[in-house]
Amino acid sequence: MNNKDIGVSGEAEASKYLEKSGYSIIDVNVRPFPGMRRGEIDIVAWDGEVLCIVEVKTRLSRRFDASDAITVTKRRQLTRLAKAYIDKYRLNNTECRFDVMCIYNRAEYSPSDIELIRGAFDPVY
Image 1 (cartoon, one colour):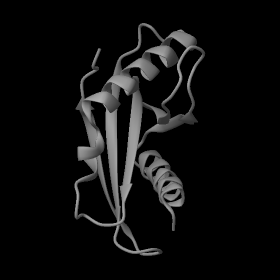
Image 2 (tube, rainbow, N blue to C red):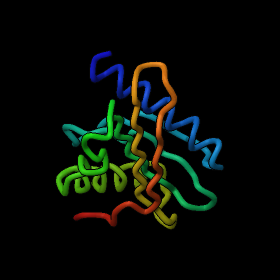
Image 3 (cartoon, rainbow, N blue to C red):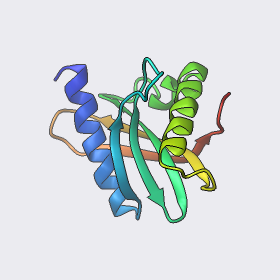
Image 4 (cartoon, one colour):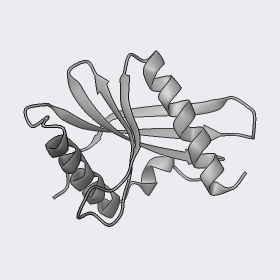
């Protein structure tokens, strides 16, 4: 599997896990908004009344902690994307939370270890 395939399978697994955990998925793979050159929101979902911006990190092993890939630069980018999403859909009075899903595939076609970190980080401006 190449990196793109690994990421796509991880995001699909993350969506299923979130739905089983009571989240309502409303959007996936949200691409840049006008005026934004890069970035993507992996999953946008409701957890009750809270809008969740979910970043999914998939790794083939636990050699490195997947959540370590959420750098300050990535947090800043996700904050900007979340703000643009909230503005676009006029969700300004909505509580927003940043969650991170770490998915560790031990081997292709074997069960994955999944870690959901609710409120993984605060917005970075």
